[in-house]
Length: 484
Ligand code: ADP
Image (cartoon, rainbow, N blue to C red; front, side, top):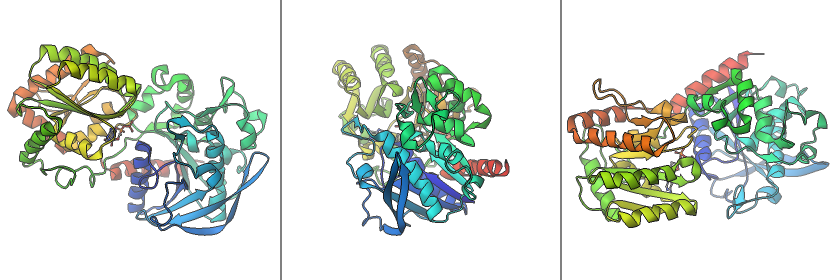
């Protein structure tokens, strides 16, 4: 199929989070499966044209916005294996330090920057004479593409045959702006109603995508269910419910070239499902790194953005309690984010300095060592659309202890000691007492080496590659392109 994939970030060009990994891995996996894939991104300042061997192609691109037009250049690279990658260059909008903000403060023209990007991608598709069967958009930044396709381009001979898909990676980010952005979009007041893009007196760009896209995907089946309820879907929950016939969940995958204990260059000792000696040595290296003693004590690891979503505050309450009741357990974390979480963690560490290790900041190498050297990995998320670390943990034989939400619930199966099935431990409610009971259960299992080895084996047999994810998208593309 001919697929156009539009995103506001993709590794290795520009990355702030999981969307960049998704936008790198999925297009590549689709291309490997034989599809023609065109990837569109803004040409941010950080996209080094020389390094990525970008060339200017086509004619100057005239993009309508507000009351006039603004001109852009289109750059092309074949840097990403098998994927035709295009960058929309417009330095006034994208030639800046951060992608969406500068030092944590959002740019005040983000609506204009991304409305322009959406319009520019459609104009570029036309200018380059791409004939897409699928136009795949991601998150609020590209969510007004389906709206434009249904309005400005509704009679375009080529585009009207294309089907639009919007993948929602996190409903926590919606792109809500004042009514004046209607003018930037060159759309009439008629659309400013609750059935379309109006949202409590504002314009909600994510909602524009939900209403107008031919199909909606979230990054796990469970999250697709959850967002139909207010707790997870917030004020958009009724919209998700209304459109649930076109909504489904497809779990993200793991890049096993990068996350594989047999080949991982970030870890000091390699190992496999057949021989875990290297894992035991990694545990020692991990404890050395954090200055923790006593190799035989089980260790729980955590790698996280420090935000409310990740539930680290709940974990702190649990550990406070657990460490008094249970002497034989240690904990390590690498994290970056909000200071209140760091402060609370430091207070806990002051009470148990020889049992808790912390490292504040972003550290990819250490993240790999935590995956390899820990016995358990904890994710107490309030919500988790897909989650990747629980799947990396499985690959490293590190047993996940997770809250049963979103992709955590889809990928982790409760371990049953009698049947010896399952690959981890999970609990239902967002509650430190439930997390406490679940960790104690895991620690009991740890004491029985035979059962624990069976659990590690189950975990390491789990596989969810990007090719698995791509296959599911491919089926969906096929289905929707047959619908009229
Ligand atoms: P999210 O996208 O919500 O942050 P995911 O679990 O989907 O959560 O993916 C997070 C990715 O970022 C993982 O690859 C994880 O290892 C990595 N990561 C998060 N925080 C850090 C950190 N402080 N240091 C290193 N890697 C981190």
